[in-house]
Image (cartoon, rainbow, N blue to C red; front, top):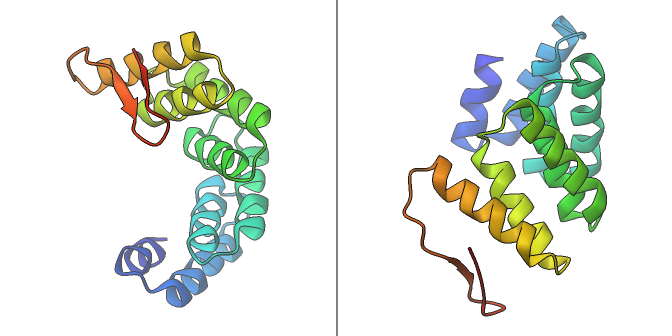
Length: 146
């Protein structure tokens, strides 16, 4: 798996995929290997295949936060907002200080018009990162949260 991570960090996606597939082949019951392959496939523009690997990782380890977060991100990017919210909430049940999940939930709740929940999650993300309590503004929509 180290080779896959190194290749991914270098942007060598073909090599990263080869190494990640080898890791899955060597350890087919490894949630980490499936999640890593999912990340590589997603970065290579093959999101559906990445989704399948994230799902496989979660089947192997239902409390694997990284795979849950990756799956939730996929759902959000593909317009499956309610499912994405449920998955990000699941991430927070397992890891309440997960900054990215709070930020993503803030964005998703804002997009659905639930500005109270959006503000709560943006505030929590700021708190977890040790940032002052200034509001977060999305310039594209000119809305401020928190």
